[in-house]
Image (tube, rainbow, N blue to C red; front, side):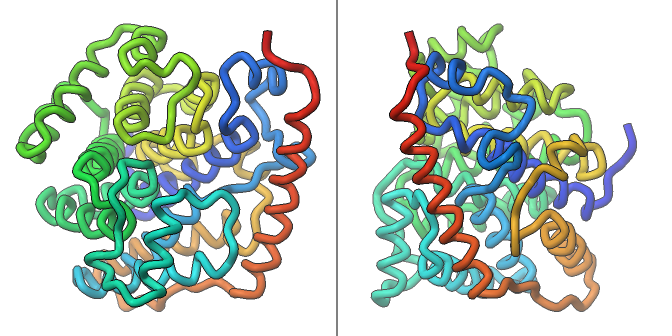
Length: 350
């Protein structure tokens, strides 16, 4: 197995998230039966004319990478940078903001300090920001744990949210550094999370399941994997090890579970992409991403700059045009509404 550069791992993680996000987005909130009837072919995008667009999952990952780039490895600078990214992200009127994230961003604008802006919730928001932290900081587990706590606390103040984010970050690190072994992964997670024994036990039980239906039964997610961290994190980690050699098949299996399909597929794509590198991602799905200004080319440049900065090369931050983001988000909102109206029509699930 060829050793990937840090740039390839970062790019693979971010672009893998974008692909999973865009594939899963049209199916979000649908039961497994309904989405199978509406979208029988998950090998291609279904959002707009055979192309895909990304949601907050990819946006949060990219904002975290931008904050890492600005931080110079300083915790305070990272937290402040990410907090400002979230403030201005909300001003861009993104579609489908989670309630906890919305409340936290409003608190930031109203003057709450970043260390106390989070609300009590065990939702998936912190998971979106966790994978890139794992890829970049995983070789220093204690630093990774501290920065996951900072990133999580910006929006979510629930130990379960932090534990899930840390577990996913560690999975991204394991996949990015070589053949991932579930036994070694679980051992390191146990050492890193002595205060989260119940959660680590749940991850161990999930990894011991032989089949995906067994996992779904364990999590009681027969109608879809919800946006609850104790459902999402075990599911993504099981899928990562179960489909470590099948990127596209893994994404399709994740989406077929139903529920919070864009987040689950984005996280799975990010973990697997970190191990594959950007050059091994499906070219058809990469070229099918219909994004601007946060385009695949922009993400590749972000990966290049972040990798250079981590290697000590003086690097400039990478921003986005606010007006371009507003225009893009307006179009995205209209397309989301069209999908909502489409769901009122048949075929319906049996």
